[in-house]
Length: 115
Image (tube, rainbow, N blue to C red; front, top):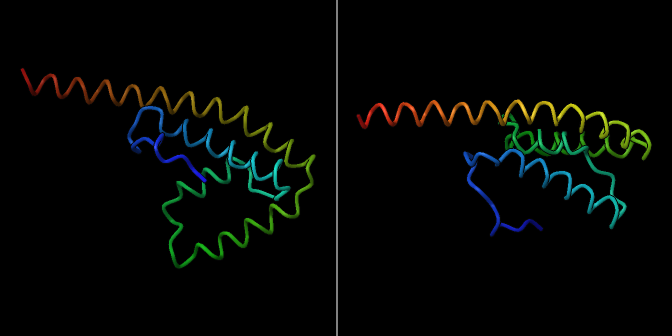
């Protein structure tokens, strides 16, 4: 279940960070509460944002992801996610900076058009 009332548009400055946190939280819920093998948060994020996933290939994609998740040990999953978290913080920080720079550039262009 996802709380849609707190959703944001895809172009919101924090949209990717919110999605990343949702991936971590959803995975944590299913792992801890239900004992379900899950993708890593990064794999889930990439699945959600991957434009090449279509109705025609989604079942194959998910079957492959479920097989991979089921084969991982808890220790292996913890190690992978710890590594991903360090890398993601670097990447998301860079992405956030680029997004801010993009908004500054758009704002600058809009201001110039008004003048």
